[in-house]
Image (cartoon, rainbow, N blue to C red):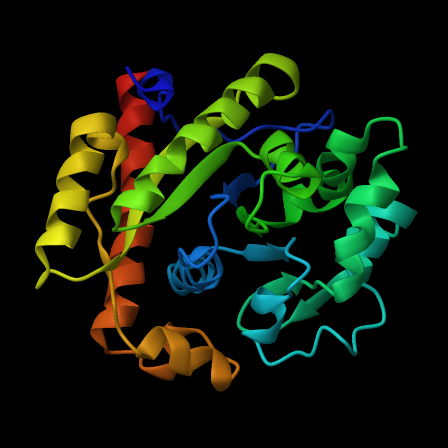
Length: 279
């Protein structure tokens, strides 16, 4: 039986010591690249914003694709998440306003794992950095690199929930096994309360038998952890970042934008349903 089947998704908003409500932290993780983590982080963040929520997106990938997708050049930023994690620069100092607030990345972040490796509490650097801003946001969404290294471990340690984008192909499904092991380790040693909010099928092509079979395999192994929303293949997801925008801004009434609006509703409504179930 899959380790994921042991995770229960419930709504949870914490409080700090002064009683202020803390926003939910959602990490997007999959060690395989090219599964639409960045696309999902940005467009779900914008969809939440359209629904009236205050959202921060954190670019924890040294490639800086989330930063670039909002029209910013990671090579030109003065301070980035590297400075936050390694030099304890306040997170507020690296947030730039675009369609949503973005805590920007730079290529320097590639050296963060080595720099953090000798630091005490290295797995909790992001968790500590987020604390001063959590009461200012309803949701904090974290884009992670395509690996299960120290940056991703920081994201999972800081997160309340994890969303796993999975490309609809067989080899991508096999990669979930390694992520399961990492999540189990995180729960045992660093963050016992982190939960899977859902598995998101991406790059779905209903015309191919392979995509349909991949969905069947996901459902068979992970049941209702699989979101009903399918992120379909479309050139719109590639075109929008070139214009420095989300797909919701690039083509507001298109099917690509509607898919992420549907996902936002599913994420929020699913949380409310489970909150009632556990009340």
